[in-house]
Structures are given as C-alpha cells and as structure tokens.
Length: 475
Image 1 (spheres, rainbow, N blue to C red):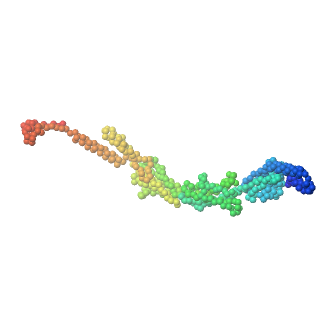
Image 2 (cartoon, rainbow, N blue to C red):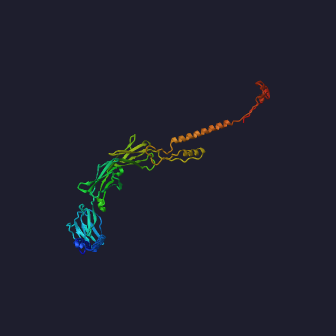
Image 3 (cartoon, rainbow, N blue to C red):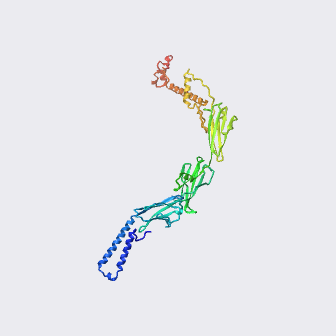
C-alpha cells in the first residue's frame, strides 16, 4: 500500500508538512508569540501555499478514470471482468468480490479460488477470468484504484440458467371430431423465466393460460407452465402439437430443438361417402352394364354396404368387392335409387345414385319432303322439345329429366297442331259470316209510302199481274 508522505505521494507529504508547521506556529513560547505580526503572517502564507499545492495534486488524481463493464454469462461458461484506467499514474489496481474480498492485488491473487485466472495486467488494465460460473458467483464485483481518495467501479455479473427439457401432456389421447383437448407443457429451473410457444403443425397458436412460479429447489430459478385448449376436426388428425421453450441462454439451434416436446393428434371422425360411375361411358341404356364404385374416408376405417332404397336389389347385382357394384343387362325395371352406406364407431353416412334406364338407341329414317305438312311437323317438334337428348350422367336425389323424345311429348305437339287448326277454322268462319252478299227483290216495290198493308199491296209496282216476273239476285 502507498505510504503517506513518501516521494511517490507528494500530496500526503504536503499535508504532513503543513500540519507540522501549523502546530509549530501555535506551539511557540509566549515570547515568540509576542513577536512582530509579520512573522505570523509569513507562517500562515507558507501554510496556505502548501495546502493549495496538495489540493491541486488531488484534482489531478481524480482525472484518473476507472471504468469496467457488466457481464452476462450462461451458467457453466466463463465470465471475464476488466478493470481499465485512463491516465494512470502507476496507482495500484485491485479486484474485489461481492463480499469485498480481494481477488487480485495488482498481479497477485490472494483469494484461493483457482477458477479466477489472470488474463492481463498492466498499468492501465487488470483483466481476470472466472470459469465454470454458477449462481453463487452473481453480484457486484469491485474494481478499485488506490488514489486519494480511492476510486471504485462496479461490474455486475448476471448468470443465465437455461431451462430443463419441457414435458407435454394431454387430458385425452384419442379424440372425436368436434371435441376439445387440453395440453399442458411445463419446464423447470430457468433464470430468467422461460417463455413457451405453441405450434399446431407449422401454425403458431396462442396459449390459453400460463403460470410462472419460483423453483422450490432454488429461489433464483423459475418453473413455467402453459396450457392450450384446442377444438379438433378431421383435418387435424396426425398433426403434431409442439411445445417450444425459448430462453436468452439458448442460442444454438441444436439446443433449441432439444427444448421442445411434441404430441400427435389422434382424431376419429365419421365417414364421408362418394359414388362414381366407371361404366357405361355416357347414358345408361337398356342392355348396358352399370358399374358403380363407392369410396369412403373415415377413422376408424369404415365398412360399406350397398342397397336399393325402398325396393329389393335385382338378382343380377354383383359385388366384386365391398365398394364395387355391378348390374348387367339393364332394363327399365332396374330404375330406382341405389345407396352406398358407410359406418364406423363414430357414425354413419351415405350417398345415393339415381338410376334411369333409357331406351336402346334406334335408327330413325330420314324425314320425307314430298308434302309441306310432313316437312313442317319435324320442325315444330325440334322447336318445342328442348330436352330431346338426356344428360351424360344421371343425377342424384331423383332430379334427372329425360331428354329423349317420348310419346307424351309427341301427343302434346299433335294436340297443339290440332288446336291451332281448329282456331284457324273458327276465325275463317267468322270472317265469311261477317262478309256475306246482298240481294234485291221486286216484291212490294213502293210499299214504303202506303198507309197500311192492303194499300201497299195495291200500290206495289205491277200489282198482282207482275207476280210472275219476280227475280232474285245473289251475289
């Protein structure tokens, strides 16, 4: 340690000299005290000069700036503390632990802890490393510079403790579509408290609730628990639910993968049924072979059953496997609704196929053009029958409207033609009735001026003698 009043410490020497002279000035005998006043003034001036010189040296000592840095380190790794001095005048640097025990005095280590090792020592820096850091090493370390007064700077060591591997649990192992499941993820022994993130597949999901509490094993550590509630559907079956822990002490990708846990969703759901027609290609006509394939997806694997709704299945029906239905030599008695039903432990569903058997194709002779009547009737049929060709596939639920020409359509067209002809005849009859011819007779000519009938007869032109000359004209 630096001795006060030594050559290396002029401030201490000046203070010591000033004190001595001050004591001498006041310890003089009374005779000397009665000396002229100028002698006392000279003594006081010398004392003031020495005090001023010491103060200047103290200000110069304060310009030696001591700095250090805080340290954040993961448990088990190495922490490095650096005490640095600017404008050092060879003052002594030492490092103290949080208990104010000297770790290093210059380059000497009084503390018997081999985890502390000297990294660098010079007039401007004292750098020390601490290996295998633990929670007990946390606290404020003191960098001290021996000046007058001594300078101190504090370096705080913060120890991060990574969390333990998380544990995930669920209240149900097997779910049914529409049910809810609650997942719980917990991790212990972290500092600071870890954060838990949930993923369903690659989609991040917000947690339902979370809890942080101190670890009973160590008051500085924390245990974290997170809960997630999900309502599942058939699309969730087989997806992983991941509980991923994040912590500032973990930056390595492999370590991050180790800090996650997964559970796979096992979702059961009732079947979905679909019927497809593999043959014939086009319309189902008399004599054709019908082949239907029923596919169903469900969990557990569903069972399939074919049946005919409200009627018995034809004897010619063939089932090559549970999902394939074949009916050969179709005829109109096969018309009806055929249903494929699928069921499992969750539920049952079905789909219907409505069969409509059309007439077998026939060759139609070309229309004659010998008369006007025969050439106009097909034109009327074509114009009034937009459903002359049926669709390529029968519809479900009985909504099919046949598009082939049948007797009802032909009868309707003939009735329309007959009705039009009758209307035309009626119109012509009324026309001729309104425009009939007029005719003239010579009977009672001049009878208009007679007073009575007898007079009219007498005055009639020609009288009775001209009765044979009556003539009628019809136009």
